[in-house]
Length: 245
Image 1 (cartoon, one colour):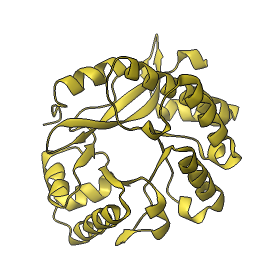
Image 2: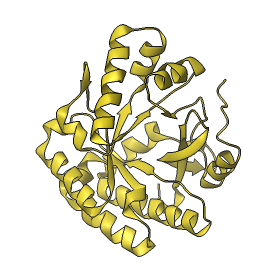
Image 3: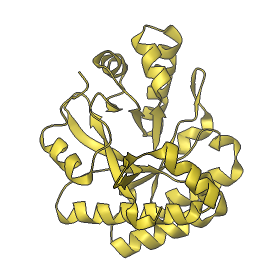
Image 4: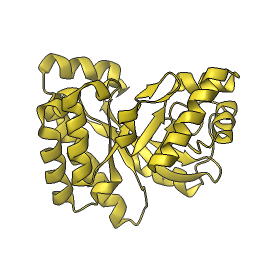
């Protein structure tokens, strides 16, 4: 798997009340000539086996910044582009230097880039320090560090709080605890001036249940799978129409 064989695909983050594209999450895919689009279940073991986590992330960050530069040149506004990095990279202390170098080389704004941190970050001093240093650089950070009835205190230092699929599913099914959690997350985010993104939203019922509680930004198959950079622009021009209904 050569780095130049990889590609970035993007899943839209949509402001549900208006259909406006307000962000995207980037995913690494491998367009294979014989096997089609290869996803993370096959890519992750290869990275783990070769132990080239940092090299992989360097390609990701370079490709992401270059795509943001192209969108800027095309006057296509994607306010936030989120991506995951390997814990190995974040713990190594190389993520900040890597991002600083690539952002400067591409000439893009750091505030467009958002790094999503894994669950468990608030219990890892090294990861919390990586998040702090990224924010000093101007890069955004996102957390899924949600407690049983709200938000872990340390997660309020992040720019975005993400609500995962199980919570959205349970909320749409009328689960009282899920409703309490989402309400607490939205309230905490407003107080911290963070945005809230509901991930893996698959149905209009889930979207309605979320927006009723004030979570207006959704991401998931309701608005489509991850697509190419060109297709994301087309989707935005169409008003981010629902495709999963």
